[in-house]
Image (cartoon, rainbow, N blue to C red; front, side, top):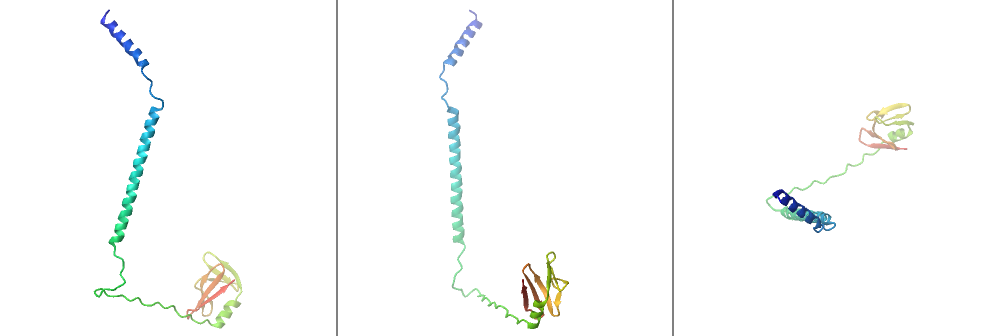
Length: 157
């Protein structure tokens, strides 16, 4: 026999042995990929948990670092005493203006820009409805007017 024949014979024997090898276990690759996925998921959860613990710890340190306002005042810092805020005293309404506003006939309320039609005339916000009475606000359900003294007259409907 020649060298070529002996090489072919050995190759045929080798090829025939490979077919007789044990087949791979069923689901081997699937088990490996599932295992790798679960390990990755576990590592991700550990990282997120560690970050949450670190974040909570840093917030607690920040609140400890900022001093709470003390109730006792030290003598070195000037004490600012807040000035009391008083509500303005209501200005009394003029009964004549109130009666005149209530007696006017409301024809329409126009929305854009807000204005109203009373006694057949159109009044935009800021205009004088009656002598001494200016229109301040127009809503769907009320009209607010103001006199020179700052008293507010409201008409609802």
